[in-house]
Length: 157
Length: 110
Image 1 (cartoon, each protein chain N blue to C red):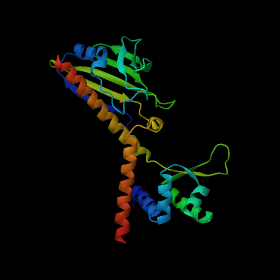
Image 2: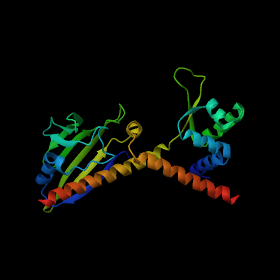
Image 3: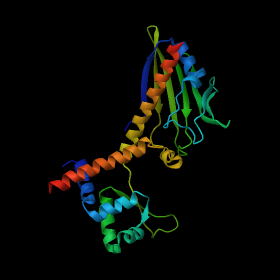
Image 4: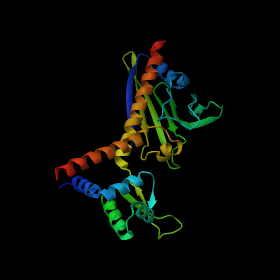
């Protein structure tokens, strides 16, 4: 079972510009969504404190700052890596986001790898009651499929 | 017959009984002790034990003990862990694809 997610997209920009936009301007383009909700109080505004000793934080509407993770690698314009923790993660759950900026002609291929998903943040759903999260949805689908199979078998008798 | 097919047969067999399906419906609301389930279903304890055994073999429920008393058995529905993780990864991938699309729009707007 793979425990990583890889997503890539080409952007019309140099690697330098893409790296700068990804880090300095994350607050301007980041789209809050249910799955990437860092705390139950959010969503807030994301910002990188730049540099190898920096971190990614979310400033909540009430002004409190939640640390999503420390920077692991800050190598502009090629590579960026940082820890990623949401409030609903278990004590042992640690994930990491690795971003590569690869030149393709005059453009840049941005590759995001989110690794460390050995487990699902179970209480992420349960504790905060997020609506229709993937896990709940999937469980419902699983049951429906099982019951359909059951009906087919039972009906054939 | 494949292992997966055998497991599915056991699962379907476990569900092929109205009292066991009723027990599953009750457990969807939360874990229960065997005694509580028996009371809600109006079944004598030995019959309830047999049903729970079949549900366990079908992979539908799991059994645990509260930390304070090893004699008490608590039953809960067993989520399908692999399918859940897969669904989680798929959702995470979609979420990142949305973020990169937003980054692209931001970069190419100026």
